[in-house]
Amino acid sequence: MHRVPRAELYAALFLTASTTAALAHATLERKEASPNTAYRGVVQIMHGCDGKPTTRVSVTIPEGIVGAKPMPKPGWQIAIARGAYERPYPSFHGTVSEGVKTITWSGGELPDDQIDEFTFFARVSDAFAPGSTVYFPVEQDCRTGSYRWSEIPAAGQSARDLKAPAPGVLIVAAPQKGPAPAAVKAGDLAIETPWMRATPGGAKVAGGYVRITNAGTAPDTLTGASIPIADRGEIHSMSMEGGVMRMAAVEGGLTIKPGETVELKPGGLHLMFLDLKAGPKAGETVQGTLTFARAGTVPVTFSVAPIGAQAPGGEAAGGHHHH
Image (cartoon, rainbow, N blue to C red; front, side, top):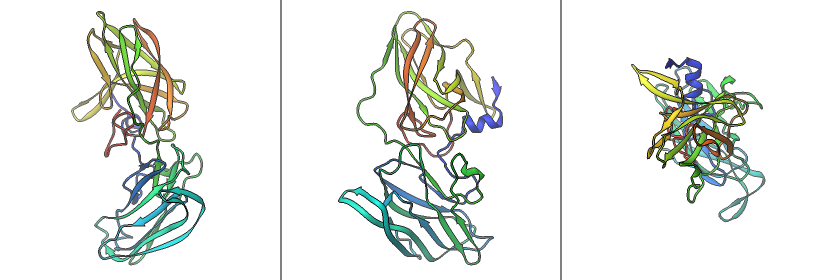
């Protein structure tokens, strides 16, 4: 076992769904959405302007987000600005060609030492593909002073490099409905639900998970895994010791005893794909292999769940997420 270096800990254990800088103070509570689904936008204002209370919050509704409606807020007045869309979008009642472009709450007062939320509802159209990010610029005015959380990263740039990043929402594929894919048979082994998490831009590691059952009379050992977009794959264990997260490669492989089911899942035993050449994106599939001492090399297909998901096809959970 080894103590996980700080850089690896953040990259490999605490990948979150956030597409905004860690120090941004106007954020969106829900950081993922799927095409052609409803979205509940909750703008969170975390502080005022140099100690002065916030008196106005305005959010820009980007192209492709349609049918936006604000939620009333006691003590605040709401103003909306409407405009034409760049193209018609499908809706429940045919198509729409115009809608709300900005929503502004004003007239209230939010003290600097308090936080509050400003909510709107909208629909994510078919304009966005899984893996893209849509940004909602926010204006924050105070009794004196203001902030403009409106910077959008250029291609290849991280939002963490921006001083005033606009809150972003990662577009992910909608969870697949219907029965789970059939287990892959390899000798006496049944391999079920191989999956992995999407990674943020620039990440060099990705976690993989799978459930393996040995229906035979002899043990078999998982010795390795591979995907084309990673230089190598390892089997890792994870544990907390004295309040320190420790991760270690499983030396000699992972043995599955006769009649035993072993599940590699977030927070425990897992596959670790290292030195990524490209990041897996939610909604995609990645071809790969699992290698066993007796069953040999078995082709599998990893489904890619959103960043921080706790199960295949699931949404990211709140808080920190472990491989």
